[in-house]
Length: 179
Image 1 (cartoon, rainbow, N blue to C red):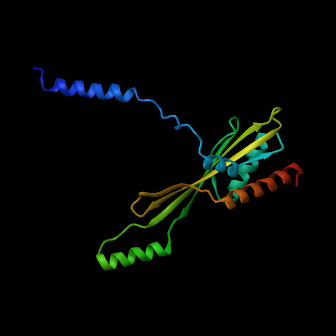
Image 2 (image 1 turned 90 degrees about the horizontal axis):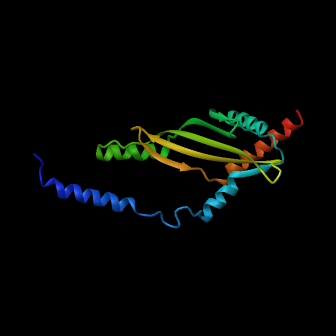
Image 3 (image 1 turned 90 degrees about the vertical axis):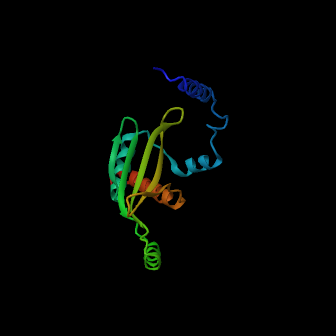
């Protein structure tokens, strides 16, 4: 009852899986690009305090002041994530969609909603662990009117990171002086 025509197919499939399993990872797969090192510098600041919990509390309050909801907070690990939803409607995109619809009779989707996500990681640094590094990253995901993701990107504008760290520095200063 065995079909002898399936034997060569089975052997070929097995050979492909064995060969694919024996491939190695390219040497440069784990190499950091110059851009990733630049991004890390942009996204990280070191504060002269070892009180990680106070920094995370200040980060949490700052995110809420900026309109973010806190999604996850793990103080022991020094991790905080948040998000906020905003409209992604763009007048130019909507106008182009209307013109296309009028000329062709085809309705094209336009960007509708976006979710801004932020992740913060705090960790002690230095030989005596008397300082704390704070790294923040901002991402944006955009959905169109059909519910499809149209954009998923890391936000790399230096002004956004500078503004975040300026506000965090002020918050930590005020908290340290109990103002």
